[in-house]
Length: 222
Image (cartoon, rainbow, N blue to C red; front, side, top):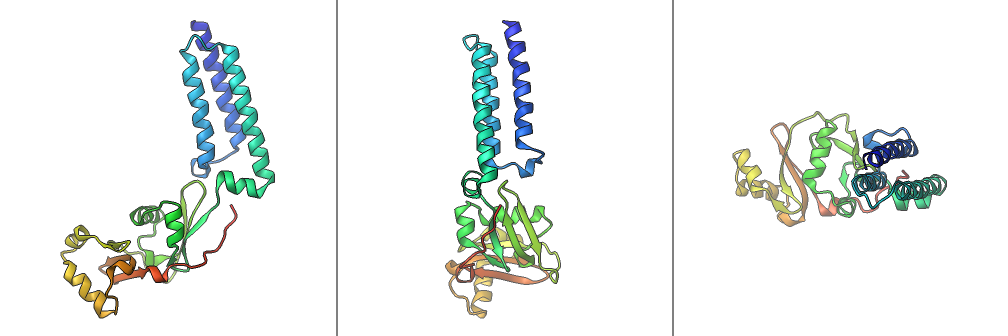
């Protein structure tokens, strides 16, 4: 029994090393969801077989070999065929283009506004006003090109997809009426038409409506 466990662990380690080589020299941020799936499946195979005496070493070796061959074939097809590459591993999506939100891109990738703001802050971009381009990469990270003329400021999200964030208003000691008055002064009476509105002490209120969102986003090959 113990000898079988040792051999399975050894084969599993070799298998993991081989799969790492198949993935190539990627950082964790470069790994796509597909890469993650087949490494998790391999880990599951190893976990299930180590302590199950009914699964012999030959069974595990066969499963490991078949899985490895399948992954190798898929990786070869992905490298040679751009259509298969896009279908399996996806492609980058522009979420902000020339300072305008790509609402369709946000929705299709299930990215919420606050989630977008969090990822932007991780790239030292603290306001949508600062962003010229924001690209969602295939690995789930974002790349940001900032407007050089805009200084970095800390902003508060006051309107998120047509809904007023009253807790955020309280945090800056303001009321819903204050926000509505500013919008009316600027000729914007319908909050539900606003996709995004942020406030900063330095620049005041800044917003984008759904009508201002990108109609034809650029296409980016991965």
